[in-house]
Length: 488
Image (cartoon, rainbow, N blue to C red):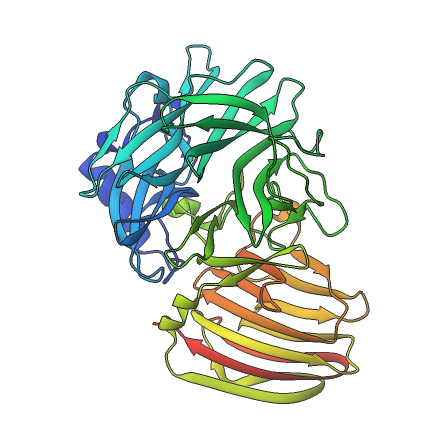
């Protein structure tokens, strides 16, 4: 369908029963619905927002356009979980009401203060000439779940020297002070992060740009998230406008991290930018702290400006599984949270040696599972797994010892999409042993390599019957030891 501006900029309250039933019927007929990832009832999901532990449970919000699989009038949709495994939909939390948010409730964060959850977001407004006006705004949720918005923004506009691309506030506390980072664009069309300070979460003063090495690194920095971890300063960010460089930056947009020393006098002394995910579909990650002190991350398993196969069904996208972060050798590692082990049922195992052949992994198969596969490459030049194998379909995950790369190949994974950006992702890897920790859902794969040293996150759209799992070695020998837990 053709989406007019009027159709894109409607609020959820204006949806008719007929429209809702049509969307629900279309989604219910989809063969591509996820089974354990957070996904929208219908419409389009994107950035995770307001991820926080509050009042005895995790609260996670996400950007939501209800009417179909396009980016239009954004709301915040609310989900809640006691265990990071089972999530309950709580409904729309934030919707456009005031003039400063007339064209959408954009991304932001949450922080607990005075027994309430303070939710910070960007108000998006368009004027009659369709010029953008951005402000930073606040809503407060009490323990009973009632949300009250402030009727005026807490930061009315961007400071001088910056464009209206000014969004995605992330707030944290240090002793009696609160700090906020906001993604921004300088008037010379380069990206950066602005830093603010407050004593009460209401009145904010600009400290200036976060001082960094990168002064010309993409044209806009979205979704900044600063925190400390293991005595390091960490800045997550999603810079737009990076060009491909070696095996990096081959998606339309990217998310990554700078690891450095803790922020001092607004200055961040950091190392090189590390791409957070080596796969195809990962963006806008946000973190929080668990009650036991772990730093947890959730990301959007999708990208802007890409058409996905479910778009025609009136829905799009999901969030990643929650991940725990830690630092090793100045690299940010990601691991699936331990709570996900609750989903494990009976284990199935397979172990074999292969030489110049492809073999089924015994009783291991399926489209919804967790699997750990330890692969040791002997004399083979390529060895690894073929997943979601069916007639003409396969997703290949392997080590190439000739090029010294670990590779995810979705060339024949099912319905093709985003082909302008290629169908292979790879990253340097020089060892002969590798550990793949795989989370497969109906239409996605998340691969944690060597306890999270690198991660490949991707959407896949194969046929329902493509459920085979195979082990292969080319031009030599390799062996595998694998265990699989199927999920309900």
